[in-house]
Amino acid sequence: MGVPRNEDFNGTDQSGAGYYQLNTSKGWRCSTASAFLKPARGRSNLRIETGAVATGIVFEGRRAVAVRYQQAGVLKEARCTGEVLLAAGAIQSPQLLQLSGIGPRALLERHGFALHVDAPEVGENLQDHLQIRLGYECTQHITTNDQLNSWLGRIRIGLQWLLFRQGPLAVGINQGGAFMHALPYEAQTPDIQFHVATLSADMAGGKVHPYSGFTLSVCQLRPRSRGHIRIRSSDPLEPPEIQPNYLAAAQDRHTIVAGVKAARAIAASAPMRPYVRREVEPGPTVTDDTDLLEFCRNHGATIFHPVGTCRMGSDPGAVVDIRLRVNGVSGLRVVDCSVMPTLVSGNTHAAAVMLAEKAADMIRDDAKARFSQVS
Ligand SMILES: Cc1cc2nc3c(=O)[nH]c(=O)nc-3n(C[C@H](O)[C@H](O)[C@H](O)COP(=O)(O)OP(=O)(O)OC[C@H]3O[C@@H](n4cnc5c(N)ncnc54)[C@H](O)[C@@H]3O)c2cc1C
Image (cartoon, rainbow, N blue to C red; front, side, top):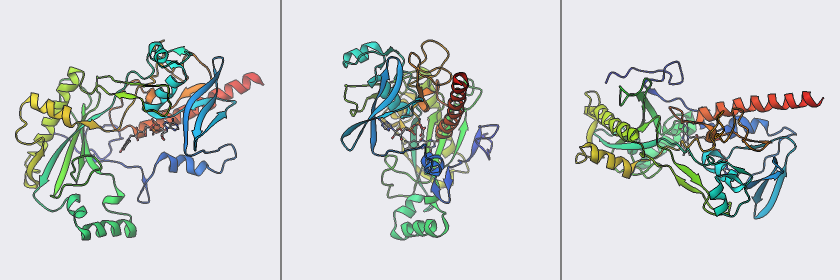
């Protein structure tokens, strides 16, 4: 297909096909909670509250001084002398700002909130990677479906992991993939990403098909469509409206259709042909661009990379400034994927961790500067 082999997607060049790198440790997926929080649990200046749902930020004048939260049905408040850091992710950070009176005036007034800051962009600019999955039946019994569909296979997988920390349980579902061009004339860097799973199911996380199957998934890396997050009531426990507006932009529609065609070309290539019995989805009846787009609309799903809803920028419309401080108030920063002005061209987790590392440096530097001014 002319796509080079890439041994390190996080190296100098993202283009190419290869195996995905994973955050694992000794066969376990390694979350930021286990990598960062667990080792710091013994510190005297850290208290971790679990089962706590933040419901709003408390202000004195224009300064954020506390966080309100509910725990086991009890309303509580955590006060701070330094800064409040909002890190509830791209869906709930804008929701919490809106619940705290920072957001679009009309929305807040509609739900009866006193306005602290009229910030029209809070909750806007939502971007996400829409994933289109193409399902295939394999000619040979070599897929994870085959292992999961038999008692013996399941026992073997379990033992592989228990005894050697190896096998399907020690890796992600999408073990390999590629970054490549669907519309070569449009982008200098790859505009689509593939995730390849050695199993198939009707939906992500669902029961695998009874036949040998695998999945080629494609997503557009830099979508132009923009959606929003908006509170639907003054109840902090009511989930907000999530409107991703996938495929609203013409460019996104062109790219995703070209991406599905690229996936089909890979499946039809000479090295793959011996393994493909049939394309189950979209299937042979879906052929022209209109039908392919309709398939994408009806079957596309999030790949869980929402960003952009508390956009960082140096312009007056930005929700946070370039040091992640919420504009219009003091003592409040947002540190999560919501601050990304545009979606990164790949999976978001490593970018979220880097963002948090950078934020930690800025918070420390600013605290030192404040301290030296006082002393
Ligand atoms: C199923 C799934 C699979 C993924 N797979 C990958 C992958 O393979 N590779 C990759 O790079 N990325 C992956 N991602 C994306 C990656 O996990 C996210 O981009 C990243 O975690 C975002 O970090 P964040 O800090 O912005 O938000 P989050 O990690 O979402 O952190 C926000 C936290 O705030 C908490 N919270 C929210 N509201 C409240 C509230 N009101 N009160 C108290 N706490 C609250 C949430 O419980 C959560 O713990 C995946 C995401 C999902 C959901």
